[in-house]
Each structure stands twice: as structure tokens, then as C-alpha cells.
Image (cartoon, rainbow, N blue to C red; front, side, top):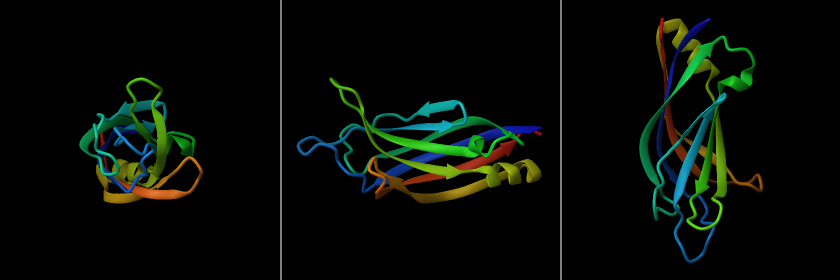
Length: 138
């Protein structure tokens, strides 16, 4: 079994819907890969166009068993001071091919791209911009 580092670059979001009418959103993103989780900073007052430009790393193995282990999920949340944070939408990126190629060649990337955001009612609105790199430990 080979292993390596999966690096995720969270760039920005555009066109995500505001949950409140009078106040701009304070969005952040919870990124999950398998049983690992990272959280972005809160883009205070950024509303529908937050920018993060943050890097996150996850440990990855190949082969890792079930395909669900090769799934990156991005949960976009709206930070609230008094009440619970509100779920805005999510995006899923399957990275099995990136990890597989990276194990074979030493390094692989999924260039910066835009992915549609799925809202709680299962409709689409907005996009999230992400890049993914895998570097083998071998």
C-alpha cells in the first residue's frame, strides 16, 4: 500500500445564496477526506463572494479500499455569533484518479477548477474554486 499527501487549495466561492436579507454572510468551509477534517477561516462579511486562498493537507493511501475514501466534500457554512451556524451548500470531488496517478508517477494534480454547489434543497447555485495535488511518500 502506498501513501502520500493530498493537498487541497481552497480558492474562493461565487454566487452562493445569502441566507439572510439584512446581513452579509460570514462563510467558511469544512473539508472532509475520509475520516479527516479541516476547517477554513471565516470570511467575515464576504457575502456571496468569499475568498480564502488557503491550503489544507490530508494523508492519503492507495489502494485504500472502498471508493468513498477517495471523496473530498466541501460543506459551505455561514458563521453565526449567537445561534448555530447555517449550512449553505456542498460540493463533492472524487480524487481516486489523482491519488492513483500520483502513486504511479510520484505526483499528480487536479488543476484549479470550479465546481457547482448543491444547496440543501438539491438545486444548484454558485460555484466553489478548488485545486488538488497529490505527492507520493515513496
